[in-house]
Length: 118
Image (cartoon, rainbow, N blue to C red; front, side):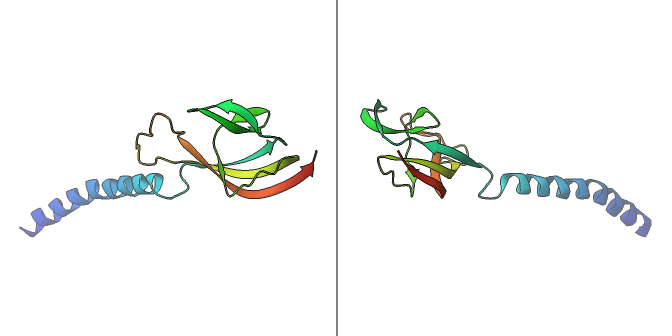
């Protein structure tokens, strides 16, 4: 009887260890607040321009293109070109469906690298 119990416990340990390792890998790869965060360096132009998103609005010009989203904690002052370090993050984690008129990403100011008068 002891031999059978020993064999059964050995069989259990053969599949249990790979299962524990797989579960650990899944938890590590899915966990963490920074999984969907990207740090970017961008140039913001000296003027906000007219644009149309959901309706008429003012947009920043970022790296020469219209930028429709706000950058949290950034206050644009007309007449200055900025070099910024920002982070782009998923506003709708866990595969939550964003509203049709919302951007998938949010932006947050990390650092004003430079502010140059124009």
